[in-house]
Every structure is written in C-alpha cells, then in structure tokens.
Length: 370
Image (tube, rainbow, N blue to C red; front, side):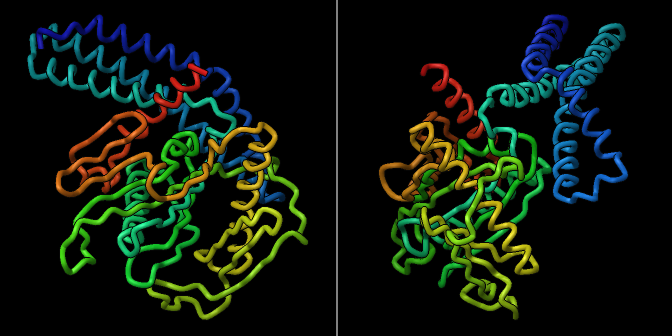
C-alpha cells in the first residue's frame, strides 16, 4: 500500500464532496429538512391526510439525502484517521484496509455525483414504471416478467420502497403488463433513462425445437406527482369500468369487483389498477397515474417537444435502447451509451447501476450540447 498517496487521495475526495454539496446546496437542504420536521411535529398535521403523507414523504427523502452526504464526509474523516494511525504503527494490513475504504468512498461519491446531473423539472419525484410485453409472443410476456423482477431487485438493493399497482398476466406465461411505483429521492430522474424498448435474444424455453427467439418489451417511466401539480379532469371525460382482479392465466384472486380501469376519452389513455385491497384504493391509484400522464402530455404539447419523459414506445425493432443477449453469447449492451456487461445473470438480477449511471451521464452530455 506504499503506492497509495493518502494525503492526495483524501484531498481529492474532499474536493469532490465539496463540489457535490455546492451543487446540492447543503444549507438549503438542511433548511428544508428543518422546515419539514416542524410541519411533521404539528399535532394537527393529520387533519389533512394527503398533506400529511406529502410532508412525511418529503421529509424522509430529504433527510435520506442529507444523511448520505453527511455520512460520506464522516467516512472520509475516519479513513484519514485510519491511515494516520496505520502509518504511525507501520501496519500494512490497516493501510490496505484504509486504501480499500478510499476506493469504496470514491465509488459512493461517483454515485452521489449522478444526483447533481439530474436537474429536470420532475427528477426529484417518485416514479411510476409500466412494463408492457411487445413483439415476440409468449417470450415477450416472459421477458416483461423478467424485467419486472430485475427492477424490483434493483430497487430492493437500494432499500427503496416498491409497490406493484397492477399486473396483467398473459395466458401461457409471463405478463402482458405491470405497473409499479418506486418511492425514493430522485426515483424518476434515476429511472427515466430506462424508458424505451428492451430487446431479448435467447433460445426460447417455449419452443420445443430449441430455436433462438428475439422478443421485445417496452418500459415507460413517469413521475408520481404531488396533488398541487395535478391537472383538472372532467368526470364526463372518463369511462370507469370495474372488474374482478385476476391472477396468472386468468385465475380469479378476488371475489369482488375491486379492480378499476379508467379510460380518458379525449386522449384514449387507459389506466388499470387491481392490486389494492378495495375499489376505492384502486381508483385513487389509477387517478394518480392518469393525472401524471395527462400533465406530461400537456407539458409536451405546450413545449411542442417530442416525448422525452414517457416516450412513444413501440416495443419492436427500430427503437430499442438495450439488448439482452443470452445466446449465442452473453452480453447486455445499451445502444445509446455503448455501456455493456458480460454477466447477464447479474444484470437480470438487478445489477443496473452501471447502465443507469452511464445513461444519466449520456443524457446530461446531450443536454449540454443542445
């Protein structure tokens, strides 16, 4: 470990952390946390449950972000102390441990730095993700289920809250579609780079001749909006259907008509929810997602921009963002950034940070160049 220049390494890490905190504006973040703590302590807070949930959610998110920055600063201080003690005692094992900790801190700072690249209007929000099977028949439905598991595992590794809102099962295997929400700081900004068509190439487990199959699935990501940002929706513009929730293969899992499908007639947007316990809860969840989609549509029309948030995703050839090749070789490659990994099992088990960080940096570079 004699090759490690600890003073230089520590100085560089502190400089990186300082740049990050300047962008995040740590004093403003501390003030926000303090204000939210005061609101959360108000004994009358829960008189308005919607506002109470908003306050507590924001407090949790902001506090987690503040803790992340504070702990990294403490880790740098601890690593410096460890290196100094090891040098005084000429302890190579502790020096090696200190060097390893510096590497770990550097990776954590690189991950935190990604947050500074997310400055979109909705990037701080929670995310609602919808996965839909595309071309490829039963393999595509199976791929959609694989992607649901991949994103769920990825979020769980981060200890982010994941809640499945709706699942529509395919007849033979897999999913026609699934919608879930992820509640965490910058969940939308982080996951928005995953929006697009994903392509799977493998030997089909559903083909008795063992032929190679290419299938597609679409991933849509939208922000979960606060009540103050919702759009006015005319009840006369809605067609609301209630039906019985169902499990895999059409198997009934609910004896009451608790599932809800809402169609917004002017735009044709359809939102279904079935995983809540009651019809009222499913309707509320569906309305939240509908409001988010309508607000994004409104923003896009006003700005006359192409879909950049949810996207017009066809789930077929020509617009794919990432390929997952399991045969004749093993590789997952992002077609926008060029980032690729040979360990396909790890990626499908939720090891997505490399792809997501590369995507956020790619998007930021594109924005800078405009």
